[in-house]
Length: 294
Image (cartoon, rainbow, N blue to C red; front, side, top):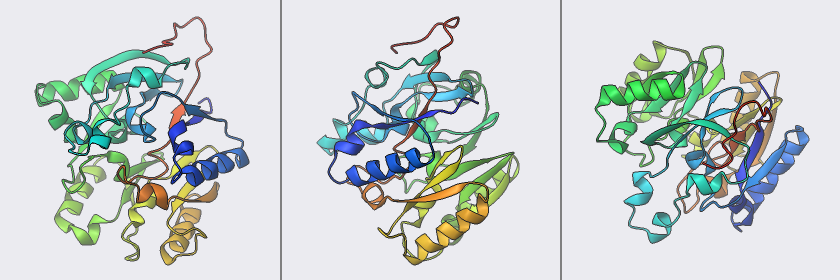
């Protein structure tokens, strides 16, 4: 697979509260010799949600309509006005996106694990006019993958799969362990579904900071892991435990802590490093038509 360019919205750097996060991400990527760029024409910095999803490792993407209910139906005018138009955000990119799913979709609800894609069943409420079986069939064809559906945790208005699981490769996934004590029946449902398809590793819930869910929302690049942390010096009990855990989980990768509290506690909804980044592969094969504008 071609090493992707890591993109962030320019708003991440320009917002005073998140500027420090953007600079830390850039410094970490420079240290790991990973190219990075900023996306223009965006209305918020959660670029994972509105950018096309990569369906093949060669840099083939699928487009969709980004119109999530948590923005459209929100009473907060600031939220309603922060919806990014995917076509505008992709201007200037040599993006090969031959597939348009023509459904309401959200990139945060997309976790690719080889030939499988994990998402929550919130996809049904976002597309109520589609019969469920037809929607799943459509997704499997469009995404070139088998769809694994997880139940939507209704306490989370976003319904994002990338806050629940992360791909570890080789048929293994990392499951957020927060439900093990908080909601045991829900946890059992998740394990029953996931155990049928993957070898499941669980991110411990260290019973410290209530925001320790953030560690699952890390960014993985070829030589390292950018790990969101909750304390500025990465010295809280949960940060220390998480750093030790990820060093054991990824012994061959460099673990770089990033102070991410401004994202996790942000006024625009909680998220972390995976949420504010997007992998871009620039297609330079001129024998294949490029979708320069979506």
